[in-house]
Length: 386
Image (cartoon, rainbow, N blue to C red; front, side, top):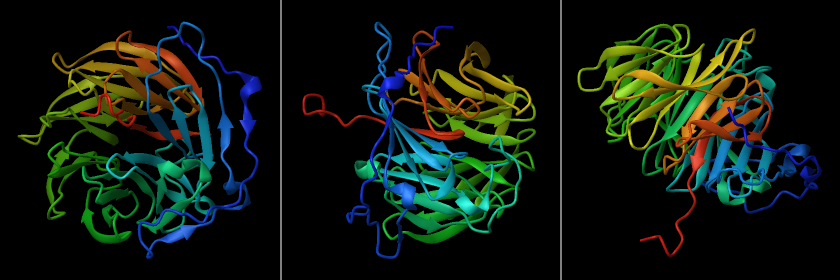
């Protein structure tokens, strides 16, 4: 396996502290604007140059939720610069919202947890009763400024609708999904789920949300218009995350304790198969062409896995196993389908996989304990905007 990355230690630098700016993001006056602690007024900047001759890294940005470090990292793919800023929570998951340019993340306040979701990202621990949804304007990312909205207990994941109007947060200890109006910054509803909701994704048509319920082995189907739970699907042991294929016909569900991925037919709401993958699969993501599903296999604290399984959708089999870094956890695919990005929670890195070569072409250092990951596509230039 070829890993094309080189850290230039001489290029590592921490920017001098800067005064907090007054142009905080204002979703609404109702939202509490957070001044971060003394160390939160600057971003740690790590820069390195890819090895000569390495495959192109593409363009755009990748963001990671660094749960064990209380930070969020941004990788600029054009050049490889990594910016790390502190946030007022231990962020477990992160989501970029294309229409508004904001970054959403959820987690418990820093004082409430020591190791996030059980130390490896998905267990139980003691925490304060309320979690937070943190909102960052990516245009001013380096300023470290953010806004905060209270959500439920032990929030795990967050998604937004296609219009960037509503956010949906899974509250693991409450067995609910909080619905947040992003224009007003207020909670406007809640949906009930199964036991310990974790990962969630919206169907391509925007009509349903599928939620993985870790403790009762089910997936809840939520109607986005009524917020009613319209179906409960038994899938297997410890479902952690779900992922749709682009046409919405199938949902893939990681089964952490079975070392498998379940496949749901969304028309019948039934499991049509289970695919053997690596140890303790966590996140799953399909490619834009719908041909492949990438599965991050984290393993355990004692025996971390460091692989990504590639499932061929047509055959329902694993066709590639790609070695990444210790504790492969989060996974996202670039908008053009050329690259897959994987957080390695125990290694503190992000692996960039070329879909063409099915190998790791770059490795980026990020914050401590990276969990969730999201991709921001580059803005179209006037020449190709049309």
